[in-house]
Image (tube, rainbow, N blue to C red; front, side, top):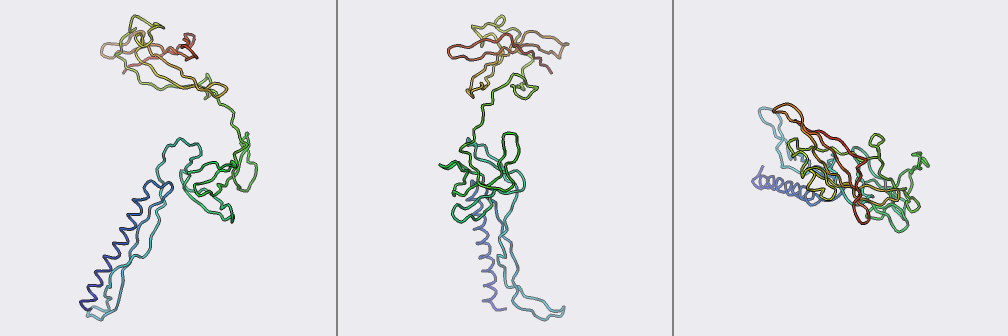
Length: 261
């Protein structure tokens, strides 16, 4: 091998690494692209000629080349958005979309969808999202995927219920301080809820028309019991429902609680 060939062999390494940097740069530039799957470069050795040596025939390397670019189809992370038409797939699978003019079918992992002026679910490239629709009872209305039109679909309001056991109410999981003051401010006072409670929280609930209402919950420690070194606390949660002009106390719905190590 001549000196020129040896220099060219080194150049192939520089060229291959330059192509690999392009792949890495493309991955970085698409860090915020929804549904993008990263790629990696696969390299292969180059051989130019075989020579005879006392140990047998051997091949002289002629450098390296980028053999292929491989997509990495690993599960990505999910993000929360304010659009109900943004969806994602956890696991295997693709969204099926259709070209509007040709009817060609494509598949994508990007779930950035919206409703067009005709009520069809489309992606940013105006490709129609396809799927099988279901009726209100959860039964499929067909067996072939088609364009999804939501222009005539209405969802009834889902009011907040009053039974956690039925899955329609509000359930709070709270961690309250066991060493909080007992009966702060001398006991519960409607005119001074902050000064006569230990903790508070606000929850949004919805009526049968879908209108949101704010419910305030004040936690008040009422007694202390237990053994030395391991005190426990009992108390109640008094709910307020915010009305149009003033809060409405609901003493008929107290909630008992206890806390301690």
